[in-house]
Image (tube, rainbow, N blue to C red; front, side, top):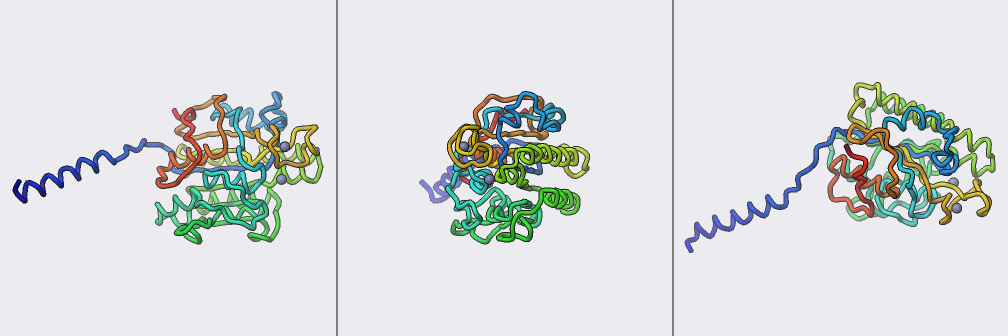
Length: 312
Ligand SMILES: [Zn+2]
Ligand SMILES: [Zn+2]
């Protein structure tokens, strides 16, 4: 075999194997993703209540335009930081719930920012609970302190206390209008906050109020020239609360009971079906997997699966 022929042969094999490696990416209309997390309502006061009296906007306006999962769960520890970290990192980690520990894995924010250095200031975490600032970083080698999203958490960042959801809502609206984030995660402290205070009326009011906030953001997306027809919205929870008769009922959460595990998921976007209630059993990390798919984020490990049933 001549030297030239051998060289040609090696190049040809290289070319064929490169071609075989090339994954064909599906094209999606989604360019931007917004995840809204309503902290700690029970399924029984939201979608599980057939009157939907505490989620009128979600039930009457949003549901016909998107997909509801009625078998959606947290499979991790049913606390705030755990639920949020499962969404952002795609794995269930038993993480400290008071903001004293970073997630071990990089979030979809960090992966996305690494892939899109030109969009450095377009990933945001805006939360009523200050402790959720830990979602902006992780401990993994090569990722710690790198590719971090912008944060606006609690009164003035980690360890400064929770702020009222009305302030968070104002910050979300002004950030959407002024900074046009492409990737945004929001946390509302209600109805969890009133639940822990043992305030049943306040807990129900918290569900009603966050329903209103979610609707305002949904409406903004529908009417804003930047976000319209290219934005996917997920509305979910970090955990539920104990069923009546378990421990102190709606006041607390954190175990394996159906009330703590069974939560809500609403999905809306240009690539998703409309007016569908899906009975497929899904859980928090599947939202993460679906975001990776929509935004073509590569190289991230997740325990979740893409929710193919959502797609047109
Ligand atoms: Zn709580
Ligand atoms: Zn429970």
